Image (cartoon, rainbow, N blue to C red; front, side, top):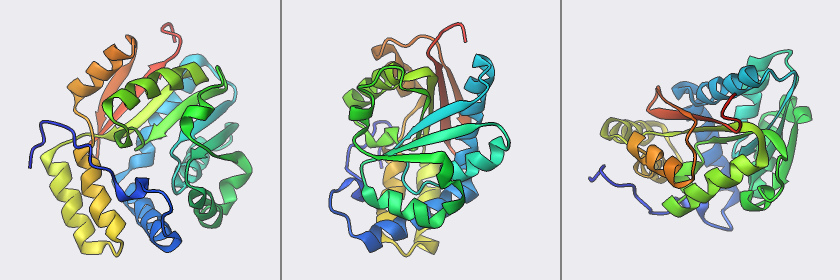
Length: 236
């Protein structure tokens, strides 16, 4: 197994015309993985950082590749009385259906767009903060650079990315974990592959330079995540 270079093998979840049963089972297991490995807390830290630095009295967050929608339920509870709203962007319509059923309490704060994120990014300054929670590893290198540029064009305040650190321990751990509990062949295939498609710190620095981005913070977080926070205004 070579961990020096990213894998570009496509995940099963990226295929069109997915079976509803397979897709929903996979989303259920993703929710469990996120819950126990603390994924949403990393995104919360980044969004809170941009809100505080920009002194926002309320915030709109556009999340790309929203999937199961569990992130919004977590953020709603963590932000409490702070007025925050969400735009969920996902190309799979079944993601919206799953989220509506699984997390009904937060849906009054969520507007769904079943769309390619590139179409959403056409609007300049269309939202306060763009977030990408375990989305960027689905992109190849050229797509990632274009994503960074497009997200900052669309955001008024900045961009928060939470994605996987490619590392042997992370790969073997999630492969073993999913072999124990997962009943979804999607999860058993995609979870380890996601790690192989993840990033090293130097790869993030390279992508950011290629996108012309100089001001950002990049932090390693448990469990094998990178938190990337990019303010649109370097003074923020």
